[in-house]
Image (cartoon, rainbow over all chains, first blue to last red):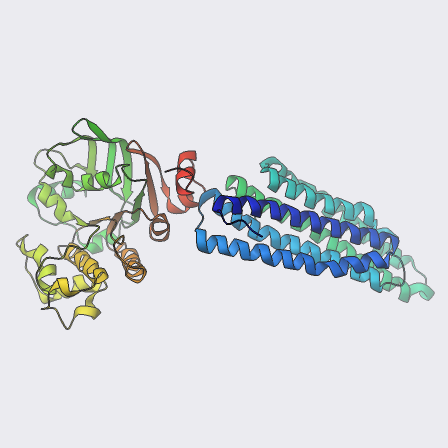
Length: 220
Length: 274
């Protein structure tokens, strides 16, 4: 239940965005573990848990809309609300990507393609979301800027993983080709989704930087 | 241009047309440098330096008693009418010192019209309310000029069939637009507005706000308002006066309301102080 006092509502919004981020990162890490270990029960729990993320996202969206409509915020208050409004959308999308990954784990007969290196690659992406939301929570502009450089590293790692998957597919014999294509396809989708998680982390950092300093340098 | 304006203030002739003004959208119309105002021993304004751009809406906001209305009244020397009021520093209209010898304050007020907080139509017909400003200036009154002023004030369609009825019969919002038409009729360059919508309901306020935006096409508008959201909606530039009669920040309205440079302004507009 959101508080009624305006300033308390702003503090509540800030806290709730951080809590939503923690929930989303937990779910994403569960999806990574499920993919790495082939644990379909854990994958199912991630898929089932997406509705909770969606509900909390919609509640925060309603709170942001009410604050804008009823309180007519300006300056840092306005930047907090508009940044939060955008950040929760990025978090909800990360939740969707966790669900996609878990759904592929549920559907897959085989384990995830080893060339993905999912625990390392996915772990980096999850850590970026955590770092971005910490920058939001602590209002740290330098941490926001550092995220953009970190995303270049993740993009490079994803690119290398993509090449590894394609090379392994080309090396497969004819007899294995159908199964290899399925595994490679699943591996490529997973790498693409990990890269997107990194992009959402950068978006969160960009909105946080705008919120903190009114600096729109990372918004692109 | 500055010379023309200087001459015109002395001779009371209006030298520049609205067409000419429209061609100079970024010039400074009014500027003050280190302006101080005293009411007896009380200092109402301190070191106000500001440049008000042409064909823009400049909003002046700030808490009660910060001197924003005092500053507005300085711009057309309305404060001359207050015996205890003393003005120091420089105030220029198109580069001409408005306090210089030979400058006629009445001529200045023809160039810089004013609309007040409470609608104050004269107990005359709607037509005569608009014509009044022309008559006192010995200017020709024509139906076309009256219609043009009423159209510019977005009132014509509502009153065109009852021009001979009393202005006092109109609603509050219509009366305020009638006062704006009266201010427009003598063809000023600047329109000063002191809380023009504070006594109006939301619909009438919305009409006045739309009107202010339209007026900026042809006039320079300076508006004092307590309503910060109104300032945010309608103005291009915002000046924030704070306690002590000081101008703390003057910038594009978007900047002031999204990312003000001064902590005191941030605290004031977000309601943490004021």
